[in-house]
Structure formats: structure tokens, C-alpha cells
Length: 168
Image 1 (tube, rainbow, N blue to C red):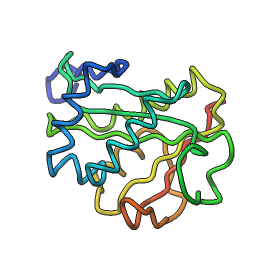
Image 2 (tube, rainbow, N blue to C red):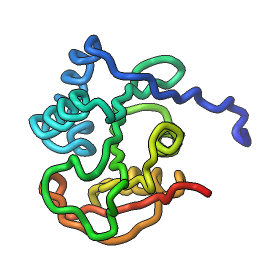
Image 3 (cartoon, one colour):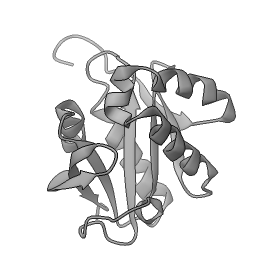
Image 4 (tube, rainbow, N blue to C red):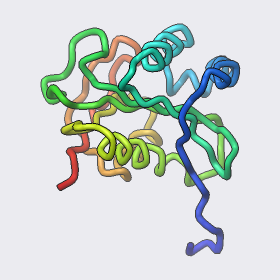
């Protein structure tokens, strides 16, 4: 790299039952709640994803150290109205990390979308990112997601809808 540092080894590994304590601890952190929403809603979404046979639930690691959580599931599973751009077959992605080294955010939505496209028939991946989370929006942009509209999310309030079409 230009700054003389080797790229960070960012990976996604399957979340397991043993990760429950770690997830609950992270969700108590106000910085995590800024990205994941309130603790009760975030825990409910994680539980829903973990109960699904098709959802991807992942622990984000940096240099093999757990630093966050990522998940993807069919957008139709999400309760409530969907933006019209979110077509059937779109998978919703979301993630959050604990405070970490610079350069980590950009890799996560790219890794998650790549796994969705490699393991499902998803036509696209979407992300709803709070307008207050500019760094998260930029991470999705670097991963090839494009802004589609502003959407009022019941959990985050005003949020950017971002979509990435299946490659090829």
C-alpha cells in the first residue's frame, strides 16, 4: 500500500451460538447502537436472521480478532413496507463494527455482497443506512452500492437506500 502498511485481513466467519455474549456486549455500546439502532430492535433482527435457514449471519474479524457483526437476508423477510426499488429477490445487508482501525469499513459490504451473490440467486443487495452515518454510506459506495432514494426507516428514521445489482 502507499502508506507502507500491509492490507488488513478482514474476514467474515459464520456467527455461532457462542457469539451471543459478544453480540450483546457490543450492542450495549452507544457507538454500535448508532449503526445498529436500538438494542432491542437489533437483537430482534439478529434473532430473526439466526432463526432463518437462508440468512447469512457473520462475525466480522480483523486480523482474526472479532470486531463486528454482518448479516444478509431476503428483503421480503423484513417487516413493513419496502421501497419500490427493492424488487423480489433482493437481499438486505447490514453490518456494524466496534471502533477499529481505519480501512476496515470499506471491505465489509463488499465481502457480504460477494458472499450473497456467490451463494444465493439474489438479483441485488440493498442497504438502508441512516443519513447520520456518512462513513457507512461511503463504505457501501466503495463496495459498488449506488444511492437510490431517501427512505424513512422505522428504526433509523431518514435513511439512504443503496442498491448493488448482481454482477454480470
